[in-house]
Image (cartoon, rainbow, N blue to C red; front, side):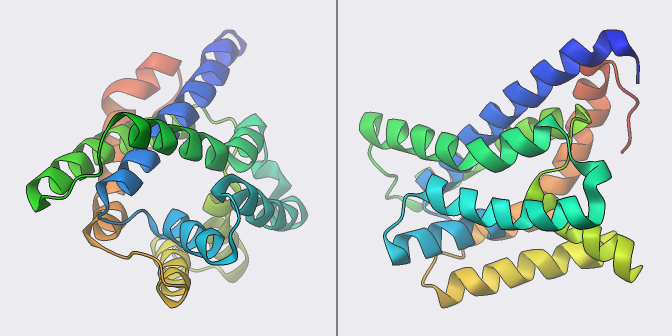
Length: 208
């Protein structure tokens, strides 16, 4: 990695996380369901009466301990920013959306908001991941299973997402079309944005 690209990569990591938080907030605002991990954290935080940011920070700290013990080579500034601040940024953007707009009621309006959320979330994820500045604590969970159990990454990711979705459902959370969209479409869109835009923007080698 070229040293002269470090500033761009750090900026991309920070901006990418901010954009990612906005996208996740829009998914929540659409009332169609979030990605499995966020859906789980929203469901549990609502159930116990905690702010999303506080609960997600606690979960991320626990996951970060595992990442430090089993895969510290994946830890970077992006790990800290994503793990510590993303939940709070999602809450900030969601409250901002609720203050300025009414929650969509019509099915078509929900779908439109969800599609906008999908594009914003995938771009933010691509920009953050392309920076190569560390793996988020939750994202490391599937990598940990892959590295230590020698299983395919896709299967490990499906398992972690399915487990989070199950916990969200058991906790009374919303598992809807937005959750399915995140599961099956975000990955390809992240790869597309990285290949066409963000690898060049940040001056890094395309890994997708």
